[in-house]
Structures are given as structure tokens and as C-alpha cells.
Image (cartoon, rainbow, N blue to C red):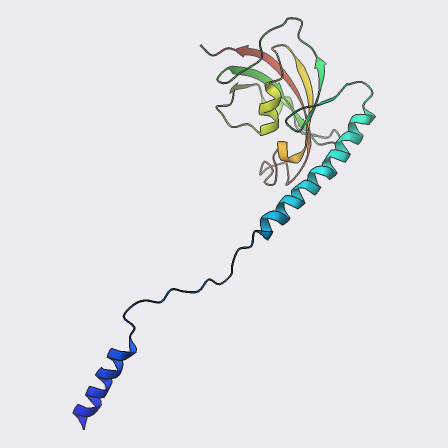
Length: 180
């Protein structure tokens, strides 16, 4: 009797186990709808910011703003007296800038941000400013208006600039040292 029960237990455990593992079924499938919804939200955010920025530009009777090919607006505050070359890849740009919100409230002053030396396209800098510096010559001052996607985007600067905040910046290029 003992041998029969023991033999029955061994037979059940032997035949109860499968020889090949069975793949798990996916819990959910991706349809791509999240990406489509996110793209639509970003388009709507940009359109809302564009209306706000264009309204701000229309109120400014002093500066003549231009839309850049890179999705931001700029105006020349002080033009260069000489026709000097603009910065290209690897050049060292020495510049000062400030950052304010669209209402003109200073977020970071030029003194707080200090004078920067930036190796063009070889260091981290938010995309709007990086592209804006390429438009400028030494001795020039520009005022930029960046939609949030060209500023600090969804994450902000993780300090004073929040998520999806458009900004203004006045930038002065002190010098451009051409790459050797």
C-alpha cells in the first residue's frame, strides 16, 4: 500500500511538469495612441504659446522682431559696428544673458548667470539659446523670445523655471574666438 501511494505520487509529479516552458501572454499591447496624444498636446501647447508671444511682440513698439527658422523670435537691440564672422561649430563664444518670463519678471539676472564661455555645439545649452548664438556677431545684443519647447521644455530647469514655460532672454555676445 505504501509503495502504491509512493509510486502514484512519483507518476503524478513526473507527468504534471511540462517539458518546455510556456511563454507569458502580454498584459497590454501598445497602440501608439499615447505618442499621438502627446504630439497633439505639444502642438496645442505651441499654438497657445505662439498666440501669447505674437501678442507680446505686437505690443512692443520699440523692437522689430523676426521669426527664426528654428521656432523662436528675436530682435536686434544693438547691432555690431563691424562685419565680423558668426560663431560656428567649436568656436568659443563669450556672452552674457538674462532670463525673464513673458511678463518681463526676471527669473535669472545677468549677474546671477555670470559671463559664460561656450564651445559652440559642444556643450549643454538649451536649444533656443544655442541656435540664437549662431545668429549673432561679437558686440551684438539680441532679445529672444523662446517658446517652452525651445527653452527648458517639459522638465524646466529643475529650479526656478517650471514645466512648459516660455521665456525671454537678452543676450550680449562679447567675443567669438574662432576654432584653430
